[in-house]
Length: 74
Image 1 (cartoon, rainbow, N blue to C red):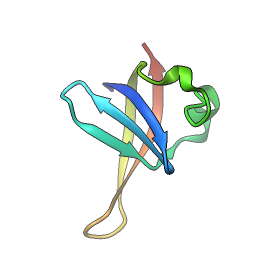
Image 2 (cartoon, rainbow, N blue to C red; image 1 turned 45 degrees about the vertical axis):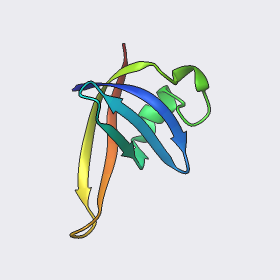
Image 3 (cartoon, rainbow, N blue to C red; image 1 turned 30 degrees about the vertical axis):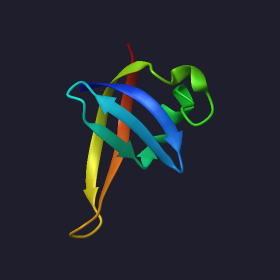
Image 4 (cartoon, helix red, strand yellow; image 1 turned 180 degrees about the vertical axis):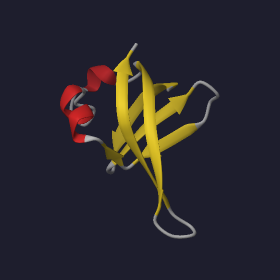
């Protein structure tokens, strides 16, 4: 688990900034997580810190999809 701050949901991507300053854009979130934390519609989660577990999947040599598997609000 890594600690990250939720920044926004824009144009289908969930943006988080991790402790090291790295921004990551997640295209997918596990449905159970999205049910627990409605990051698409509830703006109260913006600027909140979470523990994040995510997975990576290669689409091809150039593209990677990042998916949030679990979140825990800190």
